[in-house]
Image (cartoon, rainbow, N blue to C red):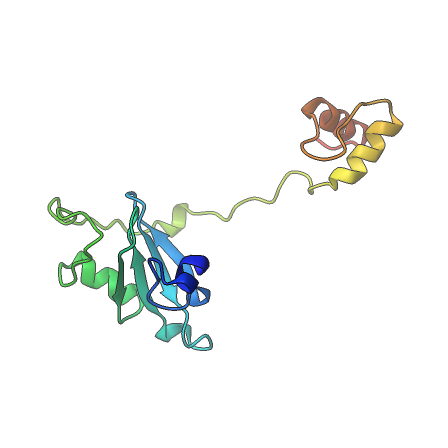
Length: 147
């Protein structure tokens, strides 16, 4: 995107450094916050990039305003399917009473280099880089009492 912008090929509506992805459609369009001014996120507006093409759409409002306007039919985004709202919209409230925060990992992540050193010292053949074989990791966890 930076290269295209610098060359004037399919340029984004603003400097790509100001674009922060905030959503995507199931068709592949990307929604971006235009992060200007950087110190005032409430003033950030929206840009939509076509899934497989150069077109951009900008909306002069925040993300909530954009969603309300599109879903109420007041704003048409050319990149979105024509029949987007034909089946209607349906909102389902979150059930906070059913939500629980994710649990921390059962064991803290371990340094791959530490595992490699242990494995070599204990006769295992391990690659210098990349994924550590599962059998080696399991042996290391067992030797260190990690369930």
